[in-house]
Figure 1 (cartoon, rainbow, N blue to C red):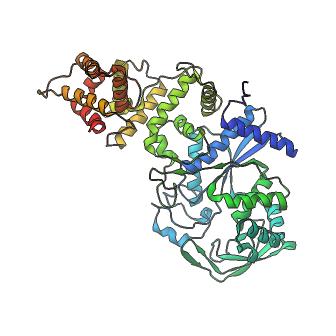
Figure 2: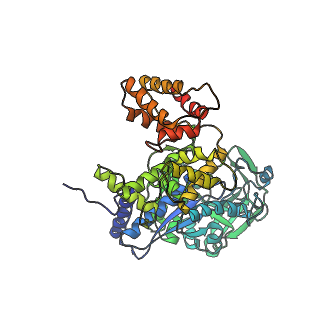
Figure 3: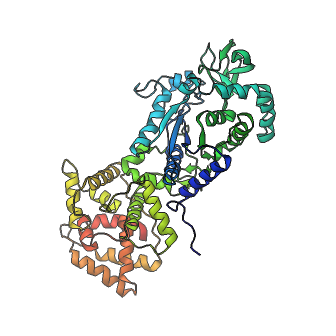
Length: 535
């Protein structure tokens, strides 16, 4: 029995369908289905934080594809206090620890109105470059405009019950003693240090004393100031344990994913949304974190951040969207070294989509086509682009420089019969490969496993490529024949050896005629690339 295909057949479609069915069961209006992604504004945005927003956008696209209007809300928490100085930023920020990032000067060139605005702009720039549609909201304005006032009032009015429930759900007793609200001290300007003692409901004010707190391993002294602040003017903010719920209710959010590091906060917020604010919490999906190649969580504070801007220096927006749309669950290690593979993998997706490459597995065919359409914002091109292995372009980039560099590389690609026209798309990819070559001095070694027999054959080929006269020119036809005959002499299929050599040279199963390509690379370059695989 043939299974039913939902939408485009991807995980994104299944998620969108689940959201719509849940909203129907709840009985809420489907006139506009809002999804949300929180943007951190306290440090440099990385691939993980971008992934949260991009995947939410994908869900919004899938909801539209099912026939319902939808929009992504990108929400920047720029009232968050600076807890520690991210790696690479100036030490003078120490005096601003605990202050809202929207009230801290821009530490990078003074090109934005605040620290928070600068960090938010980096993620918004990445979303724009990826073609993501969104509505931007930031905490400083949302709180300042009083958009959350009714939610804050209900939460603080129910604070005693809330404190007990938080302890019951996650074992934290903190909010049995204090309100889940952080005033910004009117004297020292810091968040977290001011302890909210009482909510004066008839005046919608919070009384507080600036008594100090502990942020990480640092004790932050309070200034001793006592005062009262209104909850309607952005002079304080809710604690994370309840703030998400306030946003969901005020903005009418129907979907938001979350990372496992804030799982406890989401559990409490779901209860607050349902039980205190009488707003059915949005549908969630938990995603795993991106790790660096050492297995450590990518973190703004420790400085192992892979930013979207770095990725887009070497790879296309499509390659980054492929990384983020392939799946949402499962921990993944990621680095710039993945970019060449993702570039070529996207080309494979496009070939499958247009039928240039056959895919026998029907489920995989459907998912690949759907994935391709989401990467292209459901606006796929009418025909495939020219596809050239990324590392082939990168290797050619190492031979040329100057104003005619791209043209000279293109001429080589024409010679190898892998390109025919210097389109804007191909020119962009050549430039990205040039950036890669300029910034990566070491030779790329790909994940190619060889048997002892295959190593012997490659070593024999390299030995026979030795030429006593350093000025002599390698003969392309003789090299082609050498690979063929050495394979046959050692009872191996020549096709297999050719494929392995392409994989080692350009990380592709095929490419330009190998004899001519080896001639252009030169015997020294060939040996430097292949010997690490067979030594």
